[in-house]
Image (cartoon, rainbow, N blue to C red; front, top):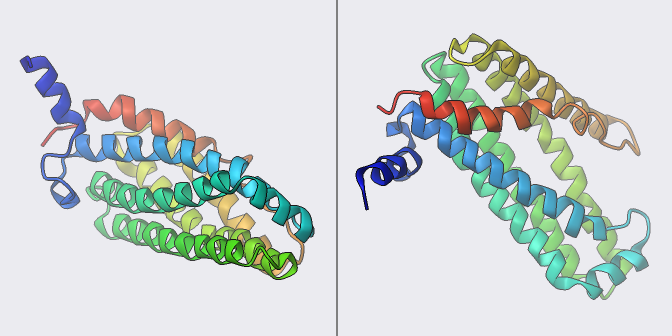
Length: 232
């Protein structure tokens, strides 16, 4: 293996494993970008694959859908678990990247995202319980539907975390301010959906799906521009 390949590998693999507080800005950026990219794929699959099997208000059809494709359903469950674990990893990486701007705000953003990830696991547990109740579709449906309720409400924490990350990005000096603005907009979308789900009966989460642009562009910045950050 030549020196060029070795140098390239060192920019991607953390030198100190999961001791994220020792990561360099470059490593933190690449870990965060890679984690977010994988999460985007897995989250999309779980949402539009497995979760689409749940038909609100139709217990019989929901039970039939899941019973007919159990592997797809469980693949979605596993995908959500991996997303939650990656969320914790990304929270740590973003903390390291942004702590020079403001350590306390960066830590708050990281903890909010971590708590959100734990709540996502709680929501996923409802899918597991609902699957065990499929022999009684009427009993299973409300449990399965509670996944979305818990998840969307917990996204309020995720949205607040994005607001803080957006603020830090705006003030960082090494990111274009537009990235910070777009992240704040995305955070507002998640907060609006969470509040709507919590206080408005029958509310359907709609804001985040139109205001997510900041989450996409930050992935590209982390993976492309992050390589130019200091390696120590």
